[in-house]
Image 1 (cartoon, rainbow, N blue to C red):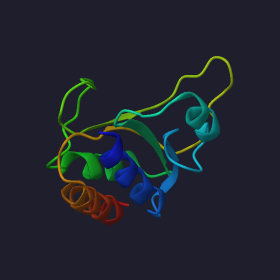
Image 2: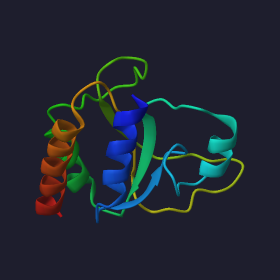
Image 3: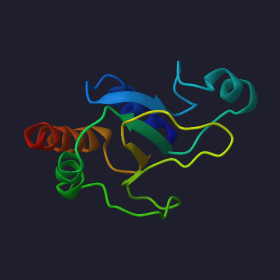
Image 4: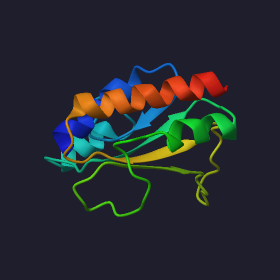
Length: 127
């Protein structure tokens, strides 16, 4: 899971629609130095903060995904994606874009990239 998640997280980091990738196992990500000090591996679970977009554009992105299911069963073998809005109590969440929680499963990373690319094309067309 970690190997594929790093491939996808690194790829997402380069997408123009993405503001930030939140995955401590990814070099340069927030918390990476602490992760590196304390861990030797990671799961396929991470989040992405998108740049602000309309709800209809986000729906177009999500509704057409073929390899990513929507769900909260983060321990399985399949890739998942679900939007969320953080509700922070210790420090206010100030970012304006929607967050996506990803679980990268056992599918081929190139197939997952193709699915996400098509999703970003739908997002752009609906914006």
